[in-house]
Amino acid sequence: MPEHLPGSALAAAQLAVEGVDTVFAIPGVHNVHLCDALLDQPGIDVFTGRHEQGLGFMANGYTRASGRIAVPLVISGPGVTNVLTALADAYVDSVPMVLIAAGCDTRYLGKGAFHELRDQTQSLASVTKWNGRADQASEVPDLIRTAFEQARAGRPGPTAVEIPMDTQTDLGAADIRPSNQPPRFGADAPSVEDAATRLAAARTPVIYAGQGAVISGAGDELVALAERLDAPCVTTALAKGVMPETHQLSLGFGLRREPVRRTLTEADVVLVVGSSLDEAATDGWRLQLPDDTIQIDIAAEVIGLTNPVAVGLHGDAKIVLQQLLDRLGPELGPKGARRELLEGLRAEERAELRDDSGWQYMQAIQSTLADDGIVTNDAATANSWALKYLTRTMPRTLNITSNLGALGFALPAAVGAKVAFPDRQVLAIVGDGGFLFNDHALSTAVQHQLGVVTIVFNDNCYSSIKSQQQALFGRTVATDLVNPDFALLAAAYGARGAIARTPDELLAALEMAWEQPGPTVIEVPLP
Image (cartoon, rainbow, N blue to C red; front, side):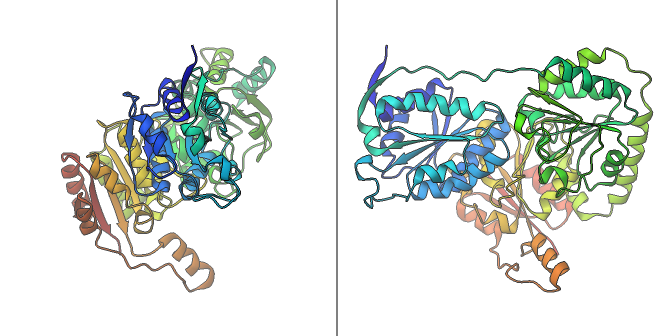
Protein backbone atom coordinates (compact mmCIF):
# COMPACT_ATOMS: atom_id res chain seq x y z
CA MET A 1 0.00 0.00 0.00
CA PRO A 2 1.24 3.53 -0.72
CA GLU A 3 2.63 5.43 2.26
CA HIS A 4 0.71 8.67 3.02
CA LEU A 5 3.35 10.82 4.69
CA PRO A 6 5.10 14.21 4.56
CA GLY A 7 7.63 14.50 1.77
CA SER A 8 10.51 14.49 4.28
CA ALA A 9 9.36 11.18 5.75
CA LEU A 10 8.89 9.69 2.28
CA ALA A 11 12.47 10.71 1.43
CA ALA A 12 13.90 9.10 4.58
CA ALA A 13 11.91 5.92 4.04
CA GLN A 14 13.07 5.67 0.42
CA LEU A 15 16.72 6.15 1.42
CA ALA A 16 16.34 3.37 3.98
CA VAL A 17 14.87 0.92 1.47
CA GLU A 18 17.74 1.75 -0.91
CA GLY A 19 20.08 0.36 1.73
CA VAL A 20 21.58 3.71 2.71
CA ASP A 21 23.13 3.41 6.15
CA THR A 22 25.08 6.69 6.24
CA VAL A 23 24.01 10.28 5.61
CA PHE A 24 26.42 13.20 5.89
CA ALA A 25 24.35 16.27 6.77
CA ILE A 26 24.64 19.86 7.92
CA PRO A 27 21.21 20.92 9.23
CA GLY A 28 19.92 24.30 8.12
CA VAL A 29 16.74 26.30 7.82
CA HIS A 30 15.74 24.63 4.56
CA ASN A 31 16.44 20.98 5.41
CA VAL A 32 15.46 20.67 9.08
CA HIS A 33 12.45 18.49 8.21
CA LEU A 34 14.60 16.16 6.11
CA CYS A 35 17.17 15.85 8.89
CA ASP A 36 14.52 15.21 11.53
CA ALA A 37 12.88 12.48 9.41
CA LEU A 38 16.14 10.51 9.40
CA LEU A 39 15.72 9.91 13.15
CA ASP A 40 12.74 7.66 12.36
CA GLN A 41 14.96 5.34 10.28
CA PRO A 42 17.03 3.36 12.83
CA GLY A 43 19.25 1.87 10.12
CA ILE A 44 20.62 5.27 9.06
CA ASP A 45 23.47 6.97 10.92
CA VAL A 46 23.91 10.72 10.50
CA PHE A 47 27.34 12.38 10.56
CA THR A 48 27.69 16.13 10.65
CA GLY A 49 30.37 18.42 9.24
CA ARG A 50 31.47 22.07 9.06
CA HIS A 51 31.39 22.74 5.32
CA GLU A 52 29.45 21.13 2.50
CA GLN A 53 32.53 20.60 0.32
CA GLY A 54 34.03 18.45 3.07
CA LEU A 55 30.65 16.78 3.55
CA GLY A 56 30.50 15.87 -0.14
CA PHE A 57 34.06 14.53 -0.09
CA MET A 58 33.16 12.39 2.93
CA ALA A 59 30.35 10.75 0.96
CA ASN A 60 32.65 10.54 -2.06
CA GLY A 61 35.39 8.82 -0.01
CA TYR A 62 32.86 6.45 1.57
CA THR A 63 31.72 5.29 -1.86
CA ARG A 64 35.21 5.02 -3.36
CA ALA A 65 36.34 2.81 -0.49
CA SER A 66 33.26 0.62 -0.18
CA GLY A 67 31.38 0.71 -3.47
CA ARG A 68 28.25 1.56 -1.44
CA ILE A 69 26.42 4.87 -1.76
CA ALA A 70 26.44 7.34 1.13
CA VAL A 71 24.20 10.39 0.83
CA PRO A 72 25.18 14.02 1.45
CA LEU A 73 22.23 16.15 2.57
CA VAL A 74 22.57 19.92 2.16
CA ILE A 75 20.55 23.10 2.33
CA SER A 76 19.62 25.12 -0.73
CA GLY A 77 21.76 28.01 -1.97
CA PRO A 78 25.17 28.01 -0.26
CA GLY A 79 24.85 24.34 0.68
CA VAL A 80 24.51 23.46 -2.98
CA THR A 81 27.25 25.79 -4.22
CA ASN A 82 29.63 24.48 -1.55
CA VAL A 83 29.07 20.82 -2.46
CA LEU A 84 29.51 21.31 -6.23
CA THR A 85 33.25 20.57 -6.16
CA ALA A 86 32.73 17.17 -4.55
CA LEU A 87 30.04 16.33 -7.10
CA ALA A 88 32.24 17.48 -9.98
CA ASP A 89 35.02 15.23 -8.71
CA ALA A 90 32.60 12.29 -8.57
CA TYR A 91 31.37 13.06 -12.06
CA VAL A 92 34.77 12.99 -13.76
CA ASP A 93 36.04 10.02 -11.71
CA SER A 94 32.86 7.89 -12.15
CA VAL A 95 31.88 7.76 -8.48
CA PRO A 96 28.17 7.00 -7.87
CA MET A 97 26.65 9.45 -5.39
CA VAL A 98 23.14 10.67 -4.63
CA LEU A 99 22.81 14.20 -3.26
CA ILE A 100 19.66 15.30 -1.47
CA ALA A 101 19.41 19.08 -1.64
CA ALA A 102 16.75 21.21 -0.02
CA GLY A 103 15.07 23.86 -2.09
CA CYS A 104 13.30 27.11 -1.43
CA ASP A 105 9.53 27.08 -1.06
CA THR A 106 8.24 26.75 -4.63
CA ARG A 107 5.70 29.52 -4.05
CA TYR A 108 8.51 32.05 -3.77
CA LEU A 109 10.98 30.86 -6.39
CA GLY A 110 12.25 33.77 -8.47
CA LYS A 111 11.10 36.33 -5.91
CA GLY A 112 14.28 36.67 -3.87
CA ALA A 113 13.72 33.90 -1.35
CA PHE A 114 16.31 33.32 1.37
CA HIS A 115 19.07 30.87 0.21
CA GLU A 116 17.78 31.04 -3.38
CA LEU A 117 20.09 30.61 -6.37
CA ARG A 118 19.30 32.05 -9.77
CA ASP A 119 18.81 28.49 -11.04
CA GLN A 120 19.76 25.81 -8.53
CA THR A 121 18.57 23.02 -10.82
CA GLN A 122 20.93 24.09 -13.61
CA SER A 123 23.81 24.48 -11.16
CA LEU A 124 23.37 20.84 -10.16
CA ALA A 125 22.94 19.74 -13.76
CA SER A 126 26.43 21.01 -14.57
CA VAL A 127 28.09 18.44 -12.27
CA THR A 128 25.70 15.47 -12.25
CA LYS A 129 24.59 12.70 -14.61
CA TRP A 130 20.95 13.30 -13.74
CA ASN A 131 18.99 15.54 -11.41
CA GLY A 132 15.37 16.20 -10.59
CA ARG A 133 13.14 18.31 -8.37
CA ALA A 134 10.12 17.08 -6.43
CA ASP A 135 7.35 19.68 -6.59
CA GLN A 136 4.91 17.34 -4.84
CA ALA A 137 5.48 15.00 -1.92
CA SER A 138 4.20 12.02 -3.89
CA GLU A 139 7.07 12.47 -6.39
CA VAL A 140 9.85 12.11 -3.82
CA PRO A 141 10.30 8.30 -3.65
CA ASP A 142 10.21 7.86 -7.43
CA LEU A 143 12.76 10.61 -7.98
CA ILE A 144 15.11 9.13 -5.37
CA ARG A 145 14.72 5.69 -6.99
CA THR A 146 15.60 7.18 -10.35
CA ALA A 147 18.59 8.96 -8.83
CA PHE A 148 19.99 5.67 -7.51
CA GLU A 149 19.38 3.88 -10.79
CA GLN A 150 21.04 6.65 -12.79
CA ALA A 151 24.00 6.88 -10.39
CA ARG A 152 24.83 3.19 -10.94
CA ALA A 153 23.88 2.78 -14.61
CA GLY A 154 26.42 2.77 -17.44
CA ARG A 155 29.38 4.89 -16.47
CA PRO A 156 28.57 5.62 -12.80
CA GLY A 157 28.41 9.13 -11.43
CA PRO A 158 26.62 11.55 -9.11
CA THR A 159 22.94 12.43 -9.23
CA ALA A 160 20.84 14.89 -7.24
CA VAL A 161 17.28 15.29 -6.01
CA GLU A 162 15.98 18.68 -4.89
CA ILE A 163 13.20 18.66 -2.30
CA PRO A 164 11.77 22.16 -1.71
CA MET A 165 10.64 23.23 1.76
CA ASP A 166 6.94 23.03 0.98
CA THR A 167 7.37 19.58 -0.57
CA GLN A 168 9.06 18.40 2.63
CA THR A 169 6.04 19.31 4.78
CA ASP A 170 3.20 18.57 2.34
CA LEU A 171 1.53 15.16 2.56
CA GLY A 172 1.64 12.66 -0.27
CA ALA A 173 1.00 9.00 -1.01
CA ALA A 174 3.66 6.92 -2.78
CA ASP A 175 5.08 3.40 -2.93
CA ILE A 176 8.32 2.80 -1.06
CA ARG A 177 10.35 0.16 -2.92
CA PRO A 178 14.01 -0.22 -3.85
CA SER A 179 15.46 0.86 -7.18
CA ASN A 180 16.47 -1.63 -9.85
CA GLN A 181 20.10 -2.68 -10.22
CA PRO A 182 21.57 -1.92 -13.66
CA PRO A 183 21.84 -4.94 -15.98
CA ARG A 184 25.29 -6.43 -16.58
CA PHE A 185 26.09 -7.48 -20.13
CA GLY A 186 28.94 -8.68 -22.29
CA ALA A 187 30.22 -7.61 -25.70
CA ASP A 188 28.93 -8.93 -29.01
CA ALA A 189 30.42 -12.24 -30.19
CA PRO A 190 32.13 -10.98 -33.40
CA SER A 191 34.00 -8.27 -31.49
CA VAL A 192 35.08 -10.76 -28.83
CA GLU A 193 36.32 -13.11 -31.55
CA ASP A 194 38.29 -10.32 -33.24
CA ALA A 195 39.86 -9.18 -29.96
CA ALA A 196 40.76 -12.71 -28.87
CA THR A 197 42.42 -13.43 -32.24
CA ARG A 198 44.58 -10.32 -31.94
CA LEU A 199 45.53 -11.09 -28.35
CA ALA A 200 46.40 -14.71 -29.15
CA ALA A 201 48.71 -13.60 -31.96
CA ALA A 202 50.38 -10.82 -29.95
CA ARG A 203 54.09 -11.15 -29.14
CA THR A 204 54.26 -8.40 -26.51
CA PRO A 205 50.71 -7.68 -25.27
CA VAL A 206 50.09 -5.25 -22.40
CA ILE A 207 46.94 -4.70 -20.32
CA TYR A 208 46.07 -1.16 -19.20
CA ALA A 209 43.41 -1.28 -16.46
CA GLY A 210 41.28 1.64 -15.30
CA GLN A 211 38.49 2.48 -12.89
CA GLY A 212 35.97 0.40 -14.83
CA ALA A 213 37.82 -2.77 -13.83
CA VAL A 214 37.45 -1.76 -10.18
CA ILE A 215 33.77 -0.85 -10.44
CA SER A 216 32.88 -4.14 -12.12
CA GLY A 217 34.90 -6.23 -9.65
CA ALA A 218 37.04 -7.65 -12.45
CA GLY A 219 40.23 -8.24 -10.46
CA ASP A 220 40.22 -12.04 -10.70
CA GLU A 221 39.52 -12.04 -14.42
CA LEU A 222 42.20 -9.41 -14.98
CA VAL A 223 44.82 -11.55 -13.24
CA ALA A 224 43.69 -14.66 -15.10
CA LEU A 225 43.92 -12.96 -18.49
CA ALA A 226 47.32 -11.44 -17.72
CA GLU A 227 48.60 -14.88 -16.79
CA ARG A 228 47.03 -16.47 -19.87
CA LEU A 229 48.69 -13.93 -22.15
CA ASP A 230 51.87 -13.54 -20.09
CA ALA A 231 51.01 -9.83 -20.37
CA PRO A 232 52.24 -7.09 -18.02
CA CYS A 233 49.47 -5.05 -16.41
CA VAL A 234 49.68 -1.28 -15.92
CA THR A 235 46.94 0.63 -14.08
CA THR A 236 45.63 4.16 -13.95
CA ALA A 237 45.71 5.99 -10.61
CA LEU A 238 42.04 5.13 -10.07
CA ALA A 239 42.68 1.40 -10.53
CA LYS A 240 45.76 1.01 -8.36
CA GLY A 241 45.61 -2.39 -6.65
CA VAL A 242 42.95 -3.93 -8.92
CA MET A 243 45.70 -6.38 -9.88
CA PRO A 244 47.89 -7.04 -6.82
CA GLU A 245 51.06 -5.02 -7.29
CA THR A 246 53.04 -7.90 -5.81
CA HIS A 247 52.13 -10.05 -8.81
CA GLN A 248 55.02 -10.83 -11.17
CA LEU A 249 53.11 -9.34 -14.11
CA SER A 250 52.04 -6.14 -12.35
CA LEU A 251 53.78 -2.88 -13.19
CA GLY A 252 51.36 -0.81 -11.14
CA PHE A 253 50.81 2.88 -11.78
CA GLY A 254 53.05 5.49 -13.37
CA LEU A 255 53.35 6.24 -17.07
CA ARG A 256 56.52 8.25 -16.38
CA ARG A 257 58.27 5.32 -14.68
CA GLU A 258 60.92 3.73 -16.88
CA PRO A 259 59.62 0.13 -16.58
CA VAL A 260 56.14 1.25 -17.64
CA ARG A 261 57.34 3.47 -20.50
CA ARG A 262 59.59 0.76 -21.88
CA THR A 263 56.93 -1.96 -21.65
CA LEU A 264 54.23 0.14 -23.34
CA THR A 265 56.62 1.31 -26.06
CA GLU A 266 57.42 -2.29 -26.96
CA ALA A 267 53.77 -3.47 -26.93
CA ASP A 268 52.27 -4.68 -30.19
CA VAL A 269 48.76 -5.04 -28.69
CA VAL A 270 47.33 -3.08 -25.75
CA LEU A 271 44.09 -4.11 -24.07
CA VAL A 272 42.50 -1.13 -22.29
CA VAL A 273 40.07 -2.24 -19.58
CA GLY A 274 37.67 0.34 -18.19
CA SER A 275 39.58 3.54 -18.87
CA SER A 276 38.31 6.40 -21.00
CA LEU A 277 41.95 7.33 -21.76
CA ASP A 278 41.41 10.89 -20.60
CA GLU A 279 44.18 13.39 -19.91
CA ALA A 280 45.08 11.97 -16.49
CA ALA A 281 45.21 8.41 -17.85
CA THR A 282 47.41 9.35 -20.82
CA ASP A 283 50.01 11.50 -19.04
CA GLY A 284 48.66 14.71 -20.54
CA TRP A 285 47.80 13.06 -23.88
CA ARG A 286 51.40 11.87 -24.32
CA LEU A 287 50.66 8.14 -24.16
CA GLN A 288 51.18 6.55 -27.58
CA LEU A 289 49.27 3.29 -28.05
CA PRO A 290 49.79 0.84 -30.93
CA ASP A 291 47.43 0.47 -33.87
CA ASP A 292 46.26 -2.80 -32.34
CA THR A 293 44.54 -1.26 -29.33
CA ILE A 294 41.48 -3.01 -27.89
CA GLN A 295 39.21 -1.08 -25.53
CA ILE A 296 36.63 -2.50 -23.11
CA ASP A 297 34.15 -0.09 -21.55
CA ILE A 298 30.62 -0.07 -20.15
CA ALA A 299 30.07 3.35 -21.77
CA ALA A 300 29.98 3.01 -25.55
CA GLU A 301 30.55 6.73 -26.04
CA VAL A 302 34.11 6.63 -24.63
CA ILE A 303 35.35 3.77 -26.81
CA GLY A 304 37.70 5.34 -29.34
CA LEU A 305 36.90 8.84 -28.05
CA THR A 306 40.49 9.94 -27.38
CA ASN A 307 42.52 7.16 -29.02
CA PRO A 308 41.77 5.13 -32.17
CA VAL A 309 41.00 1.48 -31.44
CA ALA A 310 41.16 -1.63 -33.60
CA VAL A 311 38.39 -3.32 -31.60
CA GLY A 312 35.84 -1.84 -29.23
CA LEU A 313 34.19 -4.13 -26.69
CA HIS A 314 31.08 -2.54 -25.22
CA GLY A 315 30.16 -4.26 -21.99
CA ASP A 316 30.83 -4.87 -18.33
CA ALA A 317 34.57 -5.38 -17.82
CA LYS A 318 34.22 -8.48 -15.65
CA ILE A 319 31.93 -10.21 -18.13
CA VAL A 320 33.93 -9.19 -21.21
CA LEU A 321 37.21 -10.38 -19.69
CA GLN A 322 35.59 -13.74 -18.99
CA GLN A 323 34.36 -13.86 -22.60
CA LEU A 324 37.95 -13.36 -23.76
CA LEU A 325 39.22 -16.04 -21.38
CA ASP A 326 36.62 -18.50 -22.65
CA ARG A 327 37.53 -17.76 -26.26
CA LEU A 328 41.31 -17.93 -25.73
CA GLY A 329 41.24 -21.33 -24.08
CA PRO A 330 43.53 -22.65 -21.33
CA GLU A 331 46.98 -22.44 -22.94
CA LEU A 332 48.75 -19.95 -25.20
CA GLY A 333 52.32 -21.27 -25.14
CA PRO A 334 55.35 -21.03 -22.84
CA LYS A 335 55.36 -18.55 -19.96
CA GLY A 336 57.92 -16.82 -17.81
CA ALA A 337 60.25 -14.85 -20.08
CA ARG A 338 58.40 -11.56 -19.70
CA ARG A 339 58.09 -12.01 -15.95
CA GLU A 340 61.86 -12.28 -15.65
CA LEU A 341 62.27 -9.18 -17.80
CA LEU A 342 59.82 -7.22 -15.66
CA GLU A 343 61.55 -8.25 -12.45
CA GLY A 344 64.82 -6.99 -13.91
CA LEU A 345 63.23 -3.64 -14.74
CA ARG A 346 61.73 -3.37 -11.25
CA ALA A 347 65.07 -4.21 -9.63
CA GLU A 348 66.78 -1.45 -11.65
CA GLU A 349 64.10 0.99 -10.54
CA ARG A 350 64.41 0.05 -6.84
CA ALA A 351 68.17 0.48 -6.95
CA GLU A 352 67.82 3.98 -8.40
CA LEU A 353 65.23 5.02 -5.81
CA ARG A 354 67.00 4.11 -2.59
CA ASP A 355 68.38 7.64 -2.11
CA ASP A 356 65.08 9.31 -3.01
CA SER A 357 63.47 10.87 0.08
CA GLY A 358 59.95 10.40 -1.29
CA TRP A 359 60.58 6.70 -1.76
CA GLN A 360 62.02 6.45 1.76
CA TYR A 361 58.96 8.10 3.33
CA MET A 362 56.63 5.81 1.39
CA GLN A 363 58.58 2.75 2.52
CA ALA A 364 58.09 3.87 6.12
CA ILE A 365 54.35 4.09 5.47
CA GLN A 366 54.31 0.77 3.62
CA SER A 367 55.89 -1.09 6.52
CA THR A 368 53.01 -0.15 8.87
CA LEU A 369 50.12 -0.38 6.38
CA ALA A 370 47.91 -3.47 6.22
CA ASP A 371 46.93 -4.92 2.85
CA ASP A 372 43.35 -3.70 3.38
CA GLY A 373 44.45 -0.31 4.74
CA ILE A 374 42.89 2.57 2.82
CA VAL A 375 44.92 5.56 1.62
CA THR A 376 43.39 8.79 0.35
CA ASN A 377 45.42 11.27 -1.69
CA ASP A 378 45.20 14.93 -2.58
CA ALA A 379 46.54 16.50 -5.76
CA ALA A 380 49.99 17.43 -4.44
CA THR A 381 53.66 16.60 -4.90
CA ALA A 382 53.78 14.23 -1.92
CA ASN A 383 50.84 12.32 -3.31
CA SER A 384 52.71 11.44 -6.49
CA TRP A 385 55.07 9.52 -4.20
CA ALA A 386 52.17 7.47 -2.85
CA LEU A 387 50.88 6.63 -6.31
CA LYS A 388 54.29 5.57 -7.60
CA TYR A 389 55.88 3.99 -4.54
CA LEU A 390 53.17 2.51 -2.30
CA THR A 391 52.35 -1.10 -3.11
CA ARG A 392 48.65 -1.95 -3.00
CA THR A 393 47.30 -5.47 -3.38
CA MET A 394 43.57 -4.74 -3.22
CA PRO A 395 41.31 -2.41 -5.21
CA ARG A 396 39.75 0.63 -3.51
CA THR A 397 42.71 0.91 -1.12
CA LEU A 398 44.25 4.02 -2.70
CA ASN A 399 41.76 6.69 -3.64
CA ILE A 400 42.65 9.95 -5.33
CA THR A 401 40.92 12.90 -6.93
CA SER A 402 42.32 12.12 -10.35
CA ASN A 403 40.69 13.99 -13.20
CA LEU A 404 39.43 17.03 -11.29
CA GLY A 405 42.58 17.22 -9.15
CA ALA A 406 40.80 19.06 -6.34
CA LEU A 407 42.84 20.07 -3.32
CA GLY A 408 41.10 19.33 -0.04
CA PHE A 409 39.94 15.82 -0.98
CA ALA A 410 42.19 13.59 1.13
CA LEU A 411 41.15 14.30 4.73
CA PRO A 412 37.34 14.32 4.35
CA ALA A 413 37.52 11.35 1.95
CA ALA A 414 39.51 9.50 4.62
CA VAL A 415 36.82 10.34 7.18
CA GLY A 416 34.20 8.88 4.83
CA ALA A 417 36.29 5.74 4.27
CA LYS A 418 36.68 5.28 8.03
CA VAL A 419 32.92 5.56 8.48
CA ALA A 420 32.53 2.80 5.89
CA PHE A 421 35.23 0.61 7.46
CA PRO A 422 35.72 1.55 11.14
CA ASP A 423 37.99 -1.47 11.79
CA ARG A 424 40.44 -0.85 8.94
CA GLN A 425 43.44 1.48 8.83
CA VAL A 426 42.66 4.73 6.99
CA LEU A 427 45.43 7.15 6.08
CA ALA A 428 45.19 10.57 4.42
CA ILE A 429 48.33 11.79 2.63
CA VAL A 430 48.20 15.51 1.93
CA GLY A 431 50.36 18.57 1.35
CA ASP A 432 50.26 21.62 3.57
CA GLY A 433 48.29 23.59 0.98
CA GLY A 434 45.55 21.00 0.49
CA PHE A 435 45.21 20.17 4.18
CA LEU A 436 43.93 23.63 5.06
CA PHE A 437 41.22 23.47 2.39
CA ASN A 438 39.22 21.08 4.56
CA ASP A 439 41.06 20.67 7.87
CA HIS A 440 37.67 21.13 9.56
CA ALA A 441 36.92 17.49 8.70
CA LEU A 442 39.05 16.74 11.77
CA SER A 443 36.14 17.98 13.87
CA THR A 444 33.93 15.22 12.45
CA ALA A 445 36.65 12.63 13.13
CA VAL A 446 37.03 13.89 16.72
CA GLN A 447 33.29 14.08 17.34
CA HIS A 448 32.75 10.49 16.20
CA GLN A 449 36.13 9.18 17.43
CA LEU A 450 37.22 8.01 13.99
CA GLY A 451 40.82 6.82 14.01
CA VAL A 452 41.90 8.51 10.80
CA VAL A 453 45.63 9.21 10.50
CA THR A 454 46.73 12.19 8.40
CA ILE A 455 50.26 12.87 7.20
CA VAL A 456 50.85 16.50 6.23
CA PHE A 457 53.97 16.88 4.10
CA ASN A 458 54.83 20.53 4.75
CA ASP A 459 57.14 22.57 2.51
CA ASN A 460 55.29 25.85 3.16
CA CYS A 461 54.21 26.34 -0.43
CA TYR A 462 52.12 25.04 -3.29
CA SER A 463 55.21 23.16 -4.37
CA SER A 464 54.15 21.58 -7.65
CA ILE A 465 52.93 24.93 -9.00
CA LYS A 466 55.91 26.80 -7.58
CA SER A 467 58.33 24.49 -9.39
CA GLN A 468 56.32 24.91 -12.61
CA GLN A 469 56.44 28.69 -12.29
CA GLN A 470 60.18 28.58 -11.70
CA ALA A 471 60.73 26.38 -14.75
CA LEU A 472 58.53 28.48 -17.04
CA PHE A 473 59.27 32.02 -15.87
CA GLY A 474 62.27 31.91 -13.55
CA ARG A 475 60.20 33.48 -10.77
CA THR A 476 57.17 32.66 -8.61
CA VAL A 477 54.01 34.35 -7.42
CA ALA A 478 51.41 33.53 -4.72
CA THR A 479 52.75 30.04 -4.04
CA ASP A 480 54.63 30.62 -0.76
CA LEU A 481 52.51 29.95 2.33
CA VAL A 482 52.53 30.86 6.01
CA ASN A 483 51.30 27.79 7.87
CA PRO A 484 50.17 27.05 11.41
CA ASP A 485 51.88 24.51 13.64
CA PHE A 486 49.96 21.48 12.35
CA ALA A 487 50.51 19.41 15.50
CA LEU A 488 49.09 22.24 17.64
CA LEU A 489 46.23 22.72 15.18
CA ALA A 490 45.34 19.04 15.55
CA ALA A 491 45.40 19.41 19.34
CA ALA A 492 43.10 22.44 19.10
CA TYR A 493 40.55 20.24 17.37
CA GLY A 494 40.95 17.56 20.06
CA ALA A 495 43.07 15.23 17.91
CA ARG A 496 46.64 14.11 18.54
CA GLY A 497 49.47 15.92 16.81
CA ALA A 498 53.03 14.78 16.10
CA ILE A 499 56.05 15.84 14.07
CA ALA A 500 58.27 13.44 12.11
CA ARG A 501 61.39 14.89 10.54
CA THR A 502 62.81 11.68 9.04
CA PRO A 503 61.42 8.45 7.56
CA ASP A 504 62.39 6.61 10.76
CA GLU A 505 60.52 9.16 12.88
CA LEU A 506 57.51 8.82 10.56
CA LEU A 507 57.58 5.05 11.02
CA ALA A 508 57.59 5.43 14.80
CA ALA A 509 54.80 8.03 14.74
CA LEU A 510 52.61 5.83 12.54
CA GLU A 511 53.11 2.76 14.71
CA MET A 512 51.94 4.78 17.69
CA ALA A 513 49.03 6.40 15.82
CA TRP A 514 47.57 3.08 14.68
CA GLU A 515 47.33 1.96 18.32
CA GLN A 516 45.41 5.03 19.50
CA PRO A 517 41.68 5.76 19.35
CA GLY A 518 40.58 8.87 17.52
CA PRO A 519 42.38 10.89 14.83
CA THR A 520 46.07 11.76 14.59
CA VAL A 521 47.87 14.36 12.46
CA ILE A 522 51.57 13.86 11.72
CA GLU A 523 53.45 16.79 10.22
CA VAL A 524 56.49 15.97 8.09
CA PRO A 525 58.54 19.14 7.48
CA LEU A 526 60.25 19.14 4.09
CA PRO A 527 63.23 21.28 3.05
